[in-house]
Image (cartoon, rainbow, N blue to C red; front, side, top):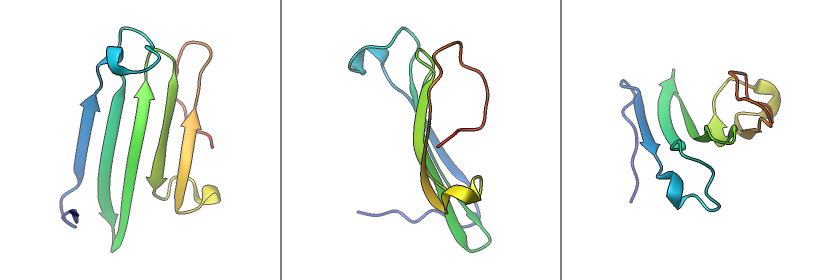
Length: 91
């Protein structure tokens, strides 16, 4: 089975995960899983990203132009040991 996204309309899915199903359990807030695909010109791009607000950990596979130094397709992760804040993901 395969799916080819529409080249005109941006598509996005976000799911909240039951925090009790994360092993080991991380806390009361539901982690999220985002899947996004879009076209920039004729170039397909995507982002598959997991984020846990309880721990500040987030990671994902990205095919985009956000970090050219990492290449067109790259894995990014970020982990905060203190209170999470908004920041550009680091590889």
